[in-house]
Length: 110
Length: 111
Image (tube, rainbow over all chains, first blue to last red):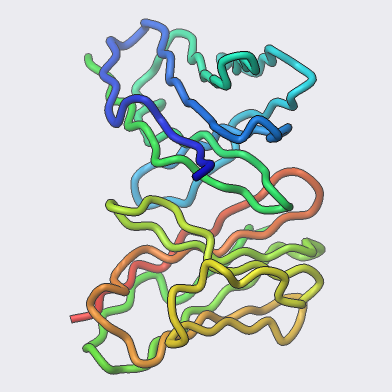
């Protein structure tokens, strides 16, 4: 079936390094993607989004890259900080609904 | 704005009991979503409303689950009777336009 999924369940990164979280999707008709961050005990929080007519979008310390050829999405976090520790979800908008992937836990090493 | 408000934050109940989860969306938002989150299944969309009308309830797992939105500022998710496998964190979210805002969730434990 069509789904949004994540390559790795856990990613450990040294504080100050850049983090890259990857996501694969299978629905080639998807045209809108979102990255969410979920901290422990909280609901998911919007980070950044991208539409299929773009291949890159930048926010504050975050960049999302979209490769439609291989149906791959990535979230890059620059100069990772302890406050970036969380589970990160990629999600796609499908028929007015947000469909979430399984999530990647980002662990920051001191 | 206080954001999406959910109550209770924690609920512990015994199998067979009725459970009601409550949500107050952000004022002015016309979409409301109920999600369930577990380690095994991740974040699952249960049902969503647009302008208080249920649009898609295909994610509701069984007839034991029901949701209502009697007005634009209130929604409930009811489980009757509850079972241990219903234990999860239940999130409510609301949206106006693009960005969707989540509440803090209700952690439900069914013994």
